[in-house]
Amino acid sequence: MLILQACEKFEYSPYEVRLNDDEKNINQRNIQRIKDLSITPTDQIKFILISDSQGFYADNEKVVNHINRHHGEAHFLLLGGDITDFGLLKEHRLIHQQLSKLKMPYVAVIGNHDGTNNGKVVYKRMYGAFDFSFTAGDSKFILLNTNYLEFDRKVPDLEWLEEELKDGQQYNHIFVLSHIYPILYEFGRDEGKGELYGKLVSKYNVSFSLHGHRHAYNLFYPFDGSIPYLISGATERLEYIVFTVNGDNITFERIQINS
Image 1 (cartoon, rainbow, N blue to C red):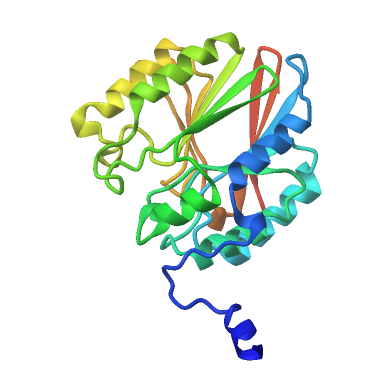
Image 2: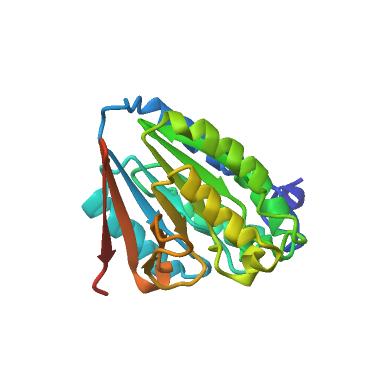
C-alpha cells in the first residue's frame, strides 16, 4: 500500500496527463473570478500582458514578484502563448504554479510551442478551449489560436473570429489576443489568412491586436495602418505591458525590470 501511494507522486511518462483539481479548466475558472469582480461599463480596467514564459522560470518569478509589488491592483493578466517550451505537463504545471502567485487571475492563449508533443491535450485539459472570449466592463477580449503549422493548417478560425467581432460591436473596446501575428507565414499568410485577419480587425474597429512569439517588444500598424498591433517581449527580457482602459481612452506602459 505504501509503495502504491508513493508511486502516485511520480510521472510514469512525460506524455501522461494527470491533473489536480486546481489545474483543470484554468481559463474558465479565472474568467469567473474576473466576472466576480463585477466591473461595470463605466469602471476603469487595468490589465497586464506578458508572453513566452517558456522555460524562463527564474525570470518568471521576477516578473510575477514585480507585478505583485507595483501593479497588484490590476484586474487580470493575459498570457500570450508559449506557456511552455515542449508542451509537456510538467512544464505547464511549473508555470501555473508560478502564475498562481499573482494577485490577480490570469488567462492564457495557446502558443506554437504549446502545440508540440502532446501539448494540445495538456492545454485543453488544463486551460480549456483553443478559441474563446470573455468580457470585462465595456471591453471584449477574444483569444484566438493562430498556430497554423501545429494545427495542420486548419487555424486560425476566422469565421469564428468574425462572429465574435460582430458580437463585440456592443462593447466600447475589443482586444484580440493570439500568439503568432498575421504578417508571418506561421499564421497562414500564404493562404491569405493574414490579410483576411487584417481586414476583419479593421472592419470591426478592434482596439488592439495583441501577440507574442517574437520575444521582443514591438508596436506596429500593418495592412491599412488603422489598428495597433502590439507584441509583448518574452518574460526572459524581464518586461511586461500594463494597459489601462478608461472610457474611450486606452493607454499602455511598457515596464522593464532592472535585474
